[in-house]
Length: 283
Image 1 (cartoon, rainbow, N blue to C red):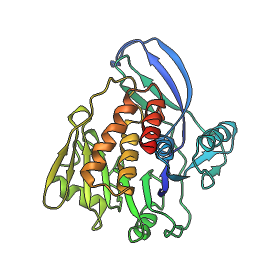
Image 2 (image 1 turned 120 degrees about the vertical axis):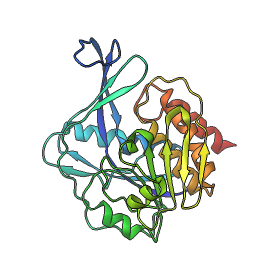
Image 3 (image 1 turned 30 degrees about the vertical axis):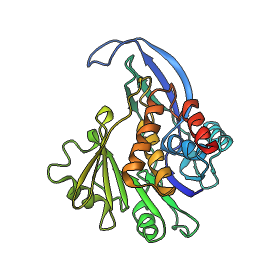
């Protein structure tokens, strides 16, 4: 299978389960759902590991007990964490506030600046995925474009994300993409962009190219926890492209992985996705 490098966060998620939907000025009771492994690095990486790929993670955590726990937990589950950097200071929790309908609000700490080192040699890698605000991402991506598949999530701002495939959700682009979607995607992804994919929950996803738009349906699911759905979608997409499927086939598989994610009470992909992937490998 493929060698895949992820540049993404590794988080300790603290789950707060509210008794009712959020409302400005309201008062709420919560149950402490405890700590769990999360972040785009784990949420995307573990599904790829279960699909049989070799997955390495580039991230940063503090040089503290929680950082030790994150690296140990991710490594035990199959991620190669040798490229995870350690910084001075604490690894702060990511607060995930969950409402009874499965929707979540994320309260994140202000992260220290994460600077990527000199880009690695890209020849050993089949795919590179960015879901980070790390300094140096642009230079890494530009040097990788000629050597491997580069997939990136749209940033929270309009910073450059040189890539072959740019991913965004409909909520990500609201108020930011007032003109043609392809032209907006290309303004972020650069001249090497092949596809701009915009997901829209139960409404499915659209893929834009320079000359057409295609729709791919979502997979119905019982929503338990939406955390990590976009990360699981990205993982399913990358897996399929690395195994030679077309972009619409890869999007359809991404939708399957996302459906498993929202039906699971966890940040990382759940046991149901793992069993699905194991069954596919046996078949």
